[in-house]
Length: 447
Image (cartoon, rainbow, N blue to C red; front, side, top):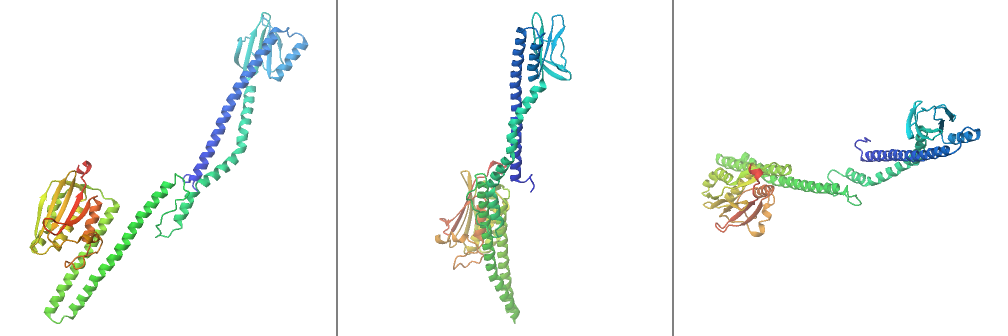
């Protein structure tokens, strides 16, 4: 396991480092505290010893000198005594010699490659100097610090086992989620269990379940789309096959011409269906990828759509016009909005009888915009207005040819742009009224 990428490994190493640092810090604090206490205790003892020697008889007799030697040896002290004229009259047994000129009171003196703590006091008859090697104090403080850290060092393996057990137990829900996901089939998009998950892991699993839900919705929609497309393509392909057989069996130029015309019309219908399927697939793919939008002049798009379909309207004698064109911009993709407009107008032309009317209007209302396409056709019954947005759905008894994908494409593009799509009855023309309300374009889009 790579510790750099293992959460368990990193936690264990960090906790071990924290315990080690805490032990070192505690040892350092214990050492400094013990050294400070030792300094105070030994300084006090040196001071008391000097005061007692100052007030006692001179150290000339053997019994007093022996007592001083014993006390000094027990406490690792050195005692030196000088007369006012600089003659040394007493010195404890020691290889070290201190300078004769001492500073009265406490001082630190470097001699013999070491440092001594020295206390000096002077009377009218003698000068007393009591010294101690600082290494004695440091050794005592070090021993006290080791005694403090020793139990921690002994307990560290046990602490690490406890830490390992706690960390492993805390990460067990993560391992359980990983095992659940790893054991799944490719098409299993059911939610992952959220039971007993810690607060740090629960949001991740919740977002994962939301992602599974979105993928499942898209997967189901794709399956339905493929099934519907296969079903809808089967009919025109069978019709083309029959028309090809009819052309093959035609025994006269007239019959052959009729068969060719039917075959051509069937190919055009199949081509139109495939084009609509491709458009719908592209729009859904664009919606999933989140293509960047820009500010689009809705009235200008309406004029372009009118120009593109004016020939088809003129062929059938339909009055196609733009009744209102406010200067208004919406945030969107120009190509997608153009496809939506063409499908809207094409649908209206297809279901409007010859000599009818199709009107388009673009209005700016408040901070948004509205696009309305009205026709003088038969309209759509109120109970059918929700179902016509389904793919390949066509109203029973409709005489106009089509694939049933036009309104599905229109709805998909409108939803991508955050627009509301409403079907109703045209009060002016009596047929269908399709109204699309767009939110206003932001300043960033307009720029």
